[in-house]
Amino acid sequence: MSAPLSIIVVEADRDRALQIVDSLRSAGDFEIHVISEATSLSRQIQSLQPDIVLIDIENPSRDSLEELALASGPMERPVAMFVDRSEEGMSAAAIEAGVSAYVVDGMKPARLKPVLDAAIARFRMFQRMRTELAETKRALEERKVIDRAKGMVMKARGLTEDEAYALLRKTAMDQNKRVADVAQALVTAAGLLS
Image (cartoon, helix red, strand yellow):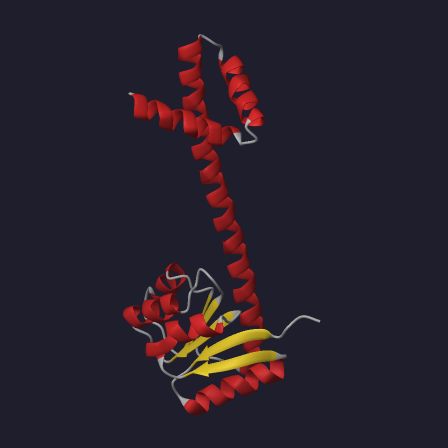
């Protein structure tokens, strides 16, 4: 059986915080922590390492919204933000700050669980996209280094492109390294010698 979902609720008003906790308890089995002071938010989140952060704020300014979102660690976990009112452009600013779900018109108990589920799903989707993008960038950089190393081997040894790659690959196998690592070492050494 899996552990209950850990949720931090950020709410300054005690009565609203109790209402949120009650709504969460009726929606499922959660480990809930309430933070009433946004000033210590980042430290407390680092300490508790929740699965999701739920922020309830009446009328956020752009600065407070970004501060709350960034303190919540939006790249590490889903952040759902509930606001009573929102000015023009605030939802876009929230999404840019990393908020997974930005809900205007306050928190309604019946919507709480579906919004949390959507925030978690959206966070996981973006996390996969960030991972794929990082892997693609790394592969592209490695490809550039390998191509550069091939060019150096072709020029120095008078080999064709296929022969140069075969030599890099054989060297990598002999040294129990990746072709990209051998290519990087060659490019670095050539840089030192020129």
